[in-house]
Length: 611
Image (cartoon, rainbow, N blue to C red; front, side, top):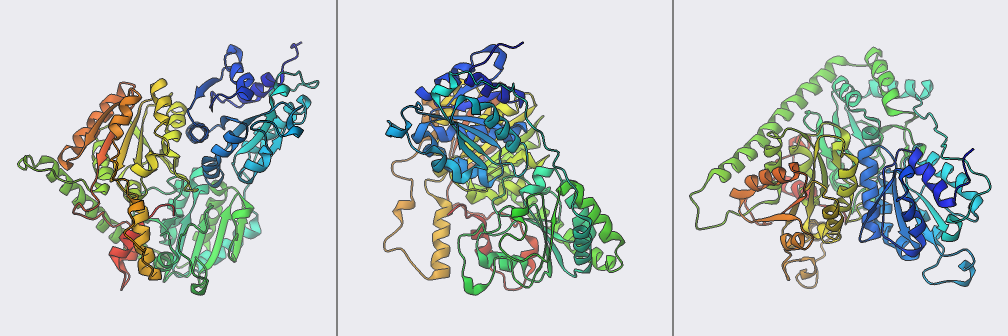
């Protein structure tokens, strides 16, 4: 018979049983019993120290996404619970399962409002699927069982548990050693709903698909491809998706919806039916007027499929809503449409041919941009001057180097002003080869790179984090952990000395609302003092290089991969110039074909990030 265990050991029974290898945290007195438990060999869980709780939370997010298992973060009383809010929000909106264990003051003190003590559940509970504070040691087994049951069942979102530290050192009277209820959740949609979806989509004259993170979560690329080809339908992604939810090398892919109401209306004009599949983000925009109608134009018939009922018809009426597993349900919808008497196959083929033509045109545009970069790279005659680097050239140069690599890439994107080019130029072999967050709270990618690198350590992949200078400054102290554990991540810091996406957003406000700032917006500049990310890297013992000349960009990236291939991190401080000549290639070729569309306006919209 097993000897009775302390509460902290029961906690780790559940963590270990879930296959979790690491917990991420910042040391605090109340968490010491939990941290100490990671030194017990039988627990088989390692503690990864970080310098800020939001880093620990971001690292746990990255680990969860890369490993397919829940992440675990240990945080410290009220400051810790408050410090994680940015990335807790990101995890909640991006459907990432993270268990947050928050150390709480001794139970005998709580009523007396002790140092750092507060109502932690109220602090963090808004962005947790379930939040609870342990009230006695005997609750620990039930709470942990429930926590992992919820973490392993859709929708996959964080769970928050506050534990007064004295309960961790007591023995629960009832001890259940780590078993978690696993709910079989891949349920096929209701036949009546499927039939209604089939009928509506077969009747559509101009259908369009909108895919969200639920598609990537289900691994349903091939099903969406079949559906797009069958219907001859363009495929858009929800804005700022956390995954790559459709293969970016296929002609039907038009990129993400634009981040303002007017832009989405331009994209969806002319369609009659929209099929929302796994869409979690329904209002990812920064400019909206009620007088202009709903975000998705009201004349479109909406059909929705998701495994989360909350996301179906959440804001606007759906003619058909189907609750079910996306990968299991889509084949039934596809076969039903193909056999439906109302389905006009010849019209679908005509739409397909048009999309294939425009997709080939887009590919030529990208090839042309790549060739320009090759010419710059080979131009060694201008030895007396520097060739400025345009931001989008970073993604295109990386894509060129990618073709020479032995392993696939996992890319973290927090460079919003070049995000659309990152999504289109690079090759992604799976939905989780791309990582962003739907929440938009800055400071997620460098912390997440810690967990992603650890989660992928048994796989032969390269991890690349492309991050803007403004975002990087949130958590360059993440590099302390990166260096301590020698995590082979290549960081490409797009350093243009300003909040570029905010500068672009300000220009749009001026254009749309007619408002101008009182004085020049120097508050959006990072230029003084200049940010030297190479110098910051040096303080953490990480190798680095400053790149100021476009002719040296590819070579610097190639050198970076050589370093991380040897098992070490590397940082490139790439000094880009917002005024450098050249424009990023087109992404949405269907929109470009519409009469009267201002392509410069669309290009600016593509460079907007979180407001």
